[in-house]
Image 1 (cartoon, rainbow, N blue to C red):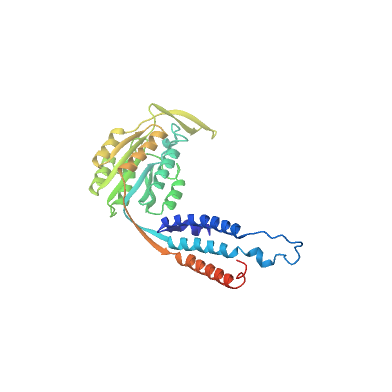
Image 2 (cartoon, rainbow, N blue to C red; image 1 turned 60 degrees about the horizontal axis):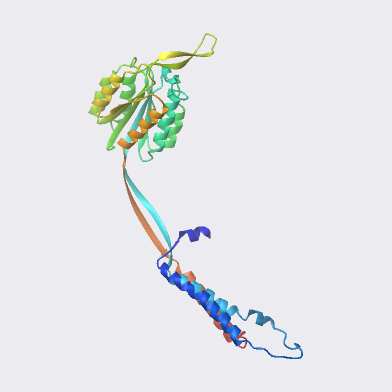
Amino acid sequence: MFSFWNEITFANPNFFWLLLLLPMMLIWYVLRIKKQQGSVKVSTLTGFESSLFSYFRHSTFALRLIALAALITAIARPQTSLSWQDVTTEGIDIVISMDISGSMLAEDFKPNRLEASKNIAMEFIRNRPYDRMGLVIFGGESFTQCPLTSDHDVLLNLFGGVQNGIIEDGTAIGMGLATAVNRLKDSQATSKVIILLTDGVNNAGSIPPLTAAEIAREFGVRVYTIGIGTTGTAPTPYKDQFGRTQYQDVPVRIDEETMAQISEMADGKYFRAKNNKELEQIYVEIDKLEKSKINVTDYRKKGEQFLPFALIAALLLGIEFLLTKTIFRTVV
């Protein structure tokens, strides 16, 4: 019932000012009843006991007030509205190509570079519901973890399973970029984008990074590159001979020159993230740079609901008329 009233609107709400007549009518009725009353002195009340009907002698006036309120509501034209939307998108196809090499376990990011990169990228995916997105991972080789999909729940689940060690170790930046381009080359999207994230220098794979950048340019793919890692050294875990986790400070080496060249060649931009906050801001900036075009058309259909109120008013007035002409004919 409450949900019904939440959906009701009124085409002529100004008619509700007529409800102010109801308390005025009630005051008039009370004054009239008092004016009609008199007093008679008698020796006994025997024979003057009130009948049951006399207790309800004011019910006809109450029915009249309720009927008038229902009639005013009907005149105000209550309506229910049904609305829906047609959404037309000119989406963007985005592939995230992520380095999962051993150096991504360094803990200059919290909890480490890899987990921070995953968490922030997953939030980026959630904020772009209208785009198809995919995921490529690379170490010493590259692998498509998830092809382009509009089912972001599937993509996010696959993202959660990414961890160091599931592919050969190393840093094949060129292979990671080339695999991502291969996933986008046949796309018909208005914009094709790769976000390439790494913390190192290309040291594996059969395709040089700049060659992969040329391929991206030929297929009209824009590439944003992100170098992740603090300056100087970063605490990195390793296992000693007894299997215990130890830490050593490992120098941070990012081939920023090559990363910048890749982005320049592929009409993108290079970013450097030295902590979690900077990485979050980079994704925010990319989100602003790559906005999908969304056309939303609203449709609304209204249904008239005055009839129930008009019927209630007619029914109550009919009952009031019958009572006045029958039961309460000599009482009122």
